[in-house]
Image 1 (tube, rainbow, N blue to C red):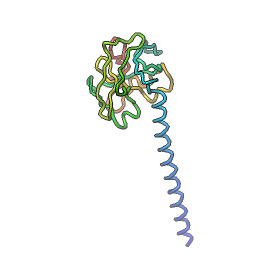
Image 2 (image 1 turned 60 degrees about the vertical axis):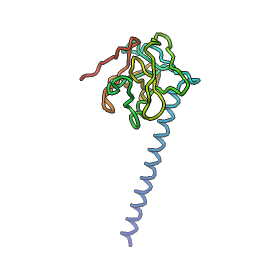
Image 3 (image 1 turned 90 degrees about the vertical axis):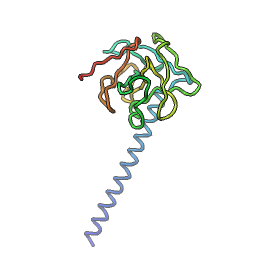
Image 4 (image 1 turned 90 degrees about the horizontal axis):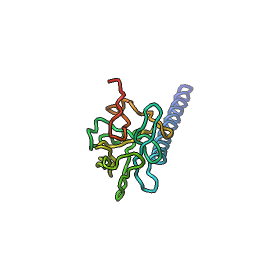
Amino acid sequence: MRVLRRRAAALGTVLVATVVVGIGALSAYVYLEFISVVRFTPEHGQVSVAVDTVPGLGPVLVTNKGYALYMFPPDGRRRVTCTGDCATAWPPLTVPAGTAVSAGPEARAELLGTAPNPDGGRVATYDGWPLYTYLGDSDPLRATGHGVDADGGYWYVMRPSGEVVDTSPH
């Protein structure tokens, strides 16, 4: 009888731990989605690509809220390949229907465009490259995702000229 009580208690502990971990994982996912929406959603439906100086990298493309914009070489220009789980960590700069992408200070309007997003909608592009933000950038004017090897390739910021800032060790 004592053995059965111990097993029942152990099973109960495992069950409670599993539920707690599951709730924690769901909470973390909801929190990440919230951060993504707050930080990277264009204000007033305006999608703007601007230029600002990121310490250690110089002038690079940023959102209208000052968050670094990244390109992903596997996209091969004009083709969004970061979808699903990848897009959770690297949210694309989405362009709502009926909205155009505008050039903020120092960005070149002739290099702006959009590309279809396989997850739905459209993504802003610069010199043909789809643009992404990075969930790891906790503050504007940081580019902690620059040179990171994740989700099948390296991630880089871009200059206003459209030049990719490639500092990876490959």
